[in-house]
Image (cartoon, rainbow, N blue to C red):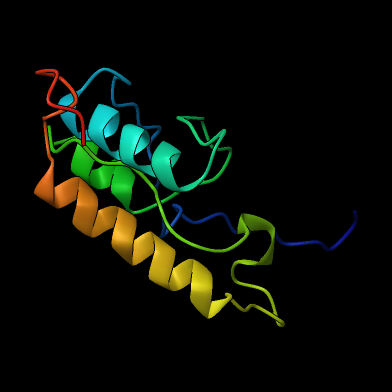
Length: 108
């Protein structure tokens, strides 16, 4: 386009892809506990970025977990049902109390 000036800058946000093995004790425990609260829950990939990717790059096993619907996240009408918040909190507490027990057969 005649007269057009284009200036390109380095991105100010950079999110790396992340992956933690489903059999990692943290992932396995969280997945098992979540399954006790919500049938059919499991480990899936996500097509969006997260600050969690920075942690996996320094060998901190990290997952993205929480209440609500990701399609509502960061929207004008974002909201989360308080029952889902309470359930997510219970899952996290239960996961912390039983961390690794799924791997050694003690359940959770």
